[in-house]
Structure formats: structure tokens, C-alpha cells
Image 1 (spheres, rainbow, N blue to C red):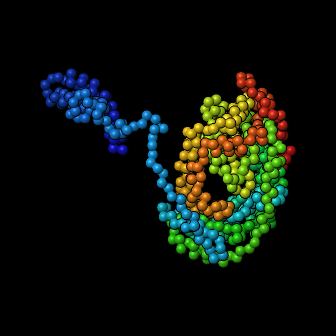
Image 2: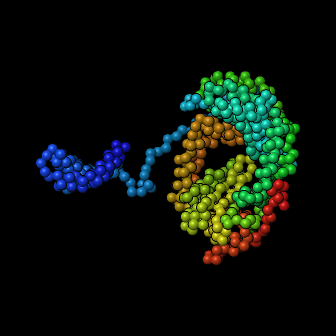
Length: 548
């Protein structure tokens, strides 16, 4: 740092000298007369010239007083040690010890798990109540979306003692927030506030959790907004691509169900209350909290509120799983007509589960092939070399409870779709047929290993990581062995995995755009969409009914 400052000062002084030297020389020449003012100008001129000579010697590498001819024996450290290219920069080893989840886990007297840690960096409090709820346990397609709507209306529908407006006003005054949401596998109710307002905010949190009113007025407002939103969903080509690709992957499975106008109109206070009563019970809860508090005091307050809440029983409908053979039977080329100037393309097949023994090989493989941003092969070919797409990437989906999706995504000028697909298939074959390089595999493994500590970048995030392990019943030592498993992946492992897990004969290729443009190619490279198989047309669904 010191040498850097020295260098900057030298350069700044040189700049000043180069500006003033001509003025000083002129002053010395034009004022060579007797008198105090003329004398002062002459001394200034001489001083500036001397400063300039000394600074020049410093830049040339000569110490003050050093003989000419020995200039390069002294150079500021910051300049002498500089590297010619960022690849030459070296760093010390990464020393990171994985936290142990068991040290954070407590439980209330009725068995509710609590992941808790003090964090005194800021005078704040953060809490998430993780709830075992979600659309995966909704086996009634006529009420698709009920899990998310119920969760949202617990907060937005007001409570027994407070309307939505009253909750909004009081929480806003305290700069606090309470939210409630649910996705496919999990729900949560969250609280964030200043520690000084913790007691009051916890009271409001409890109201939202245990006394939701599901206001008919607020529910109707939600339904009106939701139906208006459904009307526009065929105007979003990215959304259309995702919707149709999931349907091709999963078929008529709740994994691919979409909300409809009929389902939204059927949401009622009675249905929401029934879902809430079924799932928002202590046997389905897990607390995660951190903040500027005394752990024992906060645990005592949670115990007072929830420790005596008796557990019940929740029946969880069996999930149908993924019909892999049916998905294989749908391999081929599909097209959805939309009047747009970019072709949206998605290619892939069914992926695997997180428990797959080759999961770590797949992580490294996908990074090299398409998951490693600008270093990935398909990004380098399709974007950097050919300039055909702004973004192109792959993701090898490995879900916990069912198979994910291996997918490759890009969008390009409509006429470029066939050529971009041709390049993509070349890269698919290359990663299957030839070994990756040592540089590629080292870069992939280093990326995963070196960014691994960010998984635990804060107290609350750390607690959430371990809560998820328990929620999904994952191995508790998963993060202890993660880096070793990644480091153990070899070049041969990547190629063998590619041959087994990237299966072009099972590819579903979906293209959204005008057929006359996306099918015929750019007229230069010769590729056409039909080169990849017979084109099957998919009509745009009724946006309100999610049907044809």
C-alpha cells in the first residue's frame, strides 16, 4: 500500500512539474532583471527544474544521490512485484472451518426445533418460521395455488384484531416487516425488526400465525389482481417457454400445473382456513432466528408462546413422482408460434435427484459445459465466438424429492436459431466424446471450493442452511465432506458422467418464435430447424384456463 501511494504521488508531481516547468522557464527568461520580484521568480523557476530532474530519476529507478547507470537497481515494491497478467496472481490457501449445525439447534418443550444464534453486529432481529406446507401436497388441480394464496392471505388478509392496513401502518412505523409465503415444497412466516421493538413485533407475528382473519374483502382484491395477471401470461415469451417445457418434461403432473381463472375464483375463506388449519401446526414447524439478543431470554419467550401448543397429525398426500419413460417418449422438436424478433430456445431432458452418487461429478461437468458463466463451453462458442446470444447456459437439475430437469437455455435472433442449435449439438457431442482439459476441471473445482464459504456468509444464512438439512432429511455431514467430494472429481469421471447423463437422443427441443424465421436458418450456414427432427406444433394455451 505504501509503495502504491508513493507511485501515485510521483506521477502527480510529474504532472504538476510538466505543467509549470514551461512557465518557470519563461519566467526565468523574461524576468532576468534586478529587483525582489524578479529574484523570486528566478528562484521558483530553478526549484521547479530541480524537482523535475529528481522526480524523473525516481521514476527511472535511481535513488536520490545514486550514480548514473545504476537506475534499475531500485524500483518501488509495488512496481517491481507487479504481474503481467491476472493469471499470474497467487493467493495463500483458503482456511475455512465448517460450522457445526448441532451447536445451534435447540428445541421447545413440545419438540419444535429452533436454530438460534446471537449476532451483535447490528441491533436487529430476524426470524423465519419454516412450515412443512406447499403445492406438492395439493392433489386437487381445481384448487392449484391454494398453498401460496393461504400463506399470503395470512398476512394480507388481516388478523382477528388488526386489519391489513393497521398491520401495515404499525409495522411501517417501526421499520419492521412480517411476511408469509409458500412455494412448492416449503412455506415460511418471517419477522424482521429492530431489537428494541422485538416484544411488540413478536405479538404481531403471533397474530398473523395463529389468528388470521382471511378477510373476504382482501381476498377478493387478490383474486381480481390474479385474474388480470393471468390474462397477460401469453404475452411473455420467456414464461411461455418455461410453461411448455415443464409440461413436456413432467406431463400432467402437479409439478407442471399452472393456476387458472377457475381455480382463483374458487378460493374462499373456507378453503383457506381449511388449508391453514391442516398445515400450520407445531408438528410442521421449525424456527430459525438470529439477532442482537440474549439467547436464553429469546428462547424463554418462544417457549411461553409456543412450547405448550400441542402437536397434532398432518396427512400428506403421496406425491405421484416423475414418469421418466413418458418423458422419454416425448423427445423431439417442438414449436410455439409467437410474433417476436427473438427465438427463445430450451433444450433438455429429465435430470436426477440430489442423492445421486454422481451428483458431484455432475456439478463439475455442468460448470464446464454451460454452468460456468463466461468460462463455459457453450457460452464461449455461442456468445463469445459467434455473437449469437447474450446469455446461454445449462443447469443440471438434481432435486431432493424427485428428479429435476437438465436444461439448456438461450435466446437469439430468430434466423440464427438453427445455427445456434447446430453449435450446441457440436458441444454436446464434444463433452461426451472427448476428455475435458486439466485447466477446465481445475477451474470448475476451484470455483466450487473457493466460493463454498459464502454458503455461511452470515449467522442467519448459516442457521438456514442447517435447518434445510433437517427439513429435507439430508445427511448432517453434507457440508463437512462437500469440498473433498468436489476435489475428488477427475477428468475421466467427467467424461463418463457426460456419456451417461447427457443423452441427446432424449432431448426435447422447444423453440418459441415465428416459424418462418426460426425454421429456415440465416441463409449462410445451411442449418435448418428440421435438421434436428420433425417439428411438432404446440398451440398457445388459453391464458385463463391453461388449456388449448
